[in-house]
Amino acid sequence: MTKQPSDTAPVEVVIITKDHEIRGTVYVSKFTKSNRELTELLNDKERRFLAVTNAEIVLQGGSTPKRYDFLEIHIDSIIIMHPASQTLFKESSKVQEDIAKFRELRNRLSQTKPF
Image (cartoon, rainbow, N blue to C red):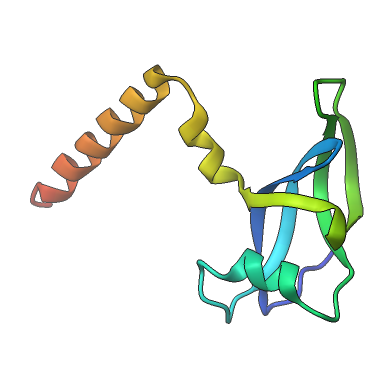
């Protein structure tokens, strides 16, 4: 198991290249604004490759996923990168209904008084 530096935090991401979709974990600085973490990784002039752990690669159009503990992706080949948690919103309307029900329940629970 690779030891992670204490000044970084893992972010699950989806990376789209011309030919592949890659899901995995990248490590971002804990000192960066949360909405700028991935942007700073991609815009770092010293960085030419992006390290990805626990990676799963699929050819665009579908194929059997290939899994790697570690890989590096050339920054220039990345078309889109976003947090994997955001992919939830492309799910079906049933998933959206479940999310809304969960949020409603969580709001009700947060309004109740403790014992």
